[in-house]
Image (cartoon, rainbow, N blue to C red; front, top):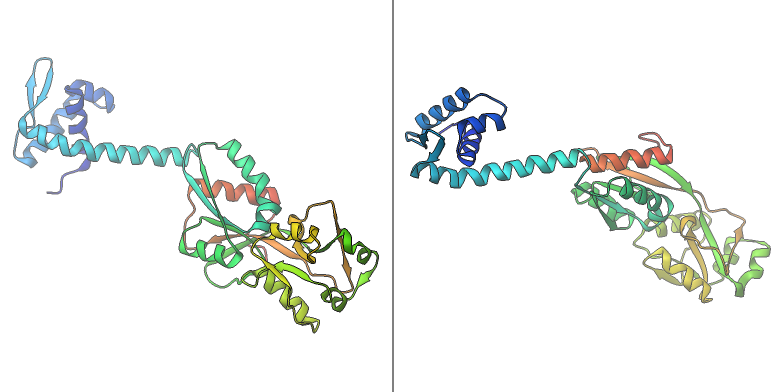
Length: 300
């Protein structure tokens, strides 16, 4: 059978209200229209669905069977419509963002606070990823957006928006503070134990490429999984730390200068061009771009 869903919807409300006239008021129509639809539905199904009475209607046994099934369907559809409506009005919903540690501290923390205060009904899921992991999550649809750090591969269906630039800092503890009084060569720097992110990160690749360009094999003595582990290791006199500027904390450390300055890097917003953003993701995307005062598709 190919029966119009609206007929079943009218049947559902008529059965629920036990009255064609009350159903007409609920659905903002007139009683003759309700009566006409019910007669068409009964004709299509080949049975009587309602017992007509002076003060309303009751379901026949066939009507009871149909209502048992139709009520579940209509209520599920209504719930879905309500959820979509609330999501579009930013009253509910979920946005999943894959973000690197540097991008979280360098851009996202104040934005997330503002977004949460403005839209408390929306759930925020943050995935703590390296840049390659974040872009993979974005391509696979696990994340709605990714906020990552360069260097990145710009191949594929991803669009990128440059948010801000930052530098890598070279820091040491009070034990080596005399080094901060002069400019070091890269060879001098590497004569001391070096602490950096591990070789599974784009940051490691960035350091490795930089030192290679200056004829030095980059071999850190300590590799860590996250940037927030570098600072306590430096303060414990375990070596000189290479750390993204947004992750550097003041106090008890000294910034070192080298004759070859580390180049700037960027924090970047990435989107999957093949997947449409939901309302919550669209809103936080707009907030990110507005706050960073950047333009779409900036070159990286």
